[in-house]
Length: 222
Image (cartoon, rainbow, N blue to C red; front, side):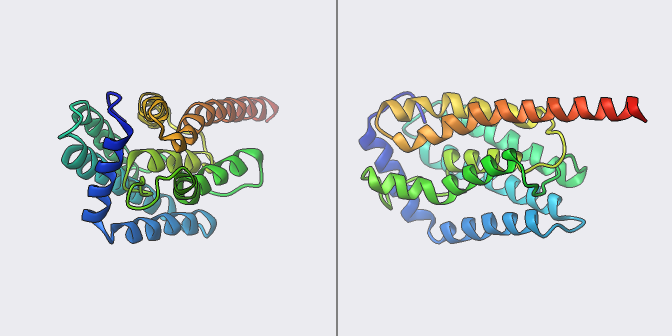
C-alpha cells in the first residue's frame, strides 16, 4: 500500500489501527450487510442509501486510515487518502443526484460480483489468517482500502444500469498501484484486489458495451 516498506511494518500499522478503531469493525460489517439487503430487497431509495454507505466507507478509509494512521510511515498516503476522499464525494453525489442503480439479476456478472463481495467480507480475513496475518494484523473490511475496493467492484457488477465511467477510475487505479506492492512484500491476500480491479473493470466495460448495443438494436427495431 505504499513505497514497499517491509511486511513487518504493514503488520504494525494494521495492529495499531485495528486496536484503536474497535468496534468499528462490527459497524462496517453491518453496513456491508445492509447494502446487500438493499440490493436484494430493492426500494425507491435503496441505491441512494447504498451509495451513501459506500461514501462513508471510502471517506473513513481516506481520512482515518490513510491520513491518520498510514501517513506517518508512508508519504504517498496523503495522495491516496485524497483519492479515496474524491471517490467518497462521487458516491455522495449519487445520493443527491442518483447515477448508480444496484439490483440482482441471475447472470455471470452478478455471480462474479457476489464472489468479489464474499472475498472482501470473508475471504480477506480467512486467507490472511491462513498466511499468518490474523487479527489484529489484518486489513479490516470496509475500513481499509483493499477489501473496500474489492467490495465496491462487486457492487458495480451488481449494477442493473451502465456504470458511469468516472466511478471506475480511482478503484482501478488503487487496485493496480495499491495491489502489487503489498503482494511483492508478502501480503498475498491482495492478489484478490488486483484480480477484482483489472478483471472486474474489463467485464464491467464489456457488460456496458453489450447493453449499449442491445439498446441501439432495440431502438432501431422499434
